[in-house]
Image (tube, rainbow, N blue to C red; front, side, top):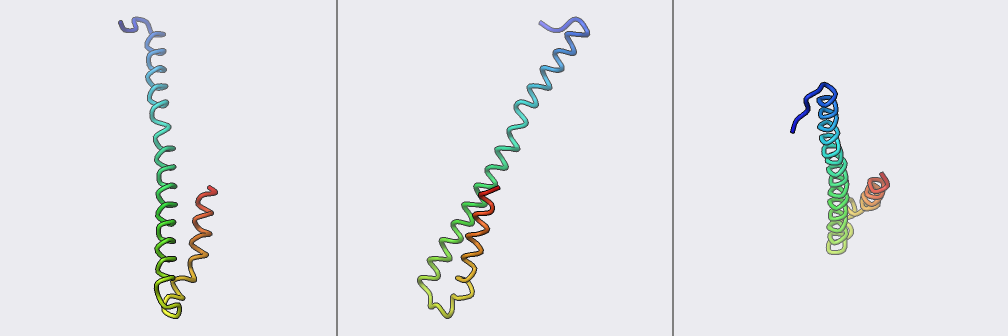
Length: 82
């Protein structure tokens, strides 16, 4: 079974393009959501490691590292709100 008229070819081409768009458009959306989740998880893990490091080390030595925790939390919240 195949199209025999000009109108059949046009309808067939439209169906093919619609199928390509229907399967191709969700892929970038899913990839973008994955990247957002991955960066959030990475920031969360880094924050957890910093907090553990702040509790274990002497405060005078770790003050410069631990003082950035608030900024890291704020960055994570901003990324989630996007």
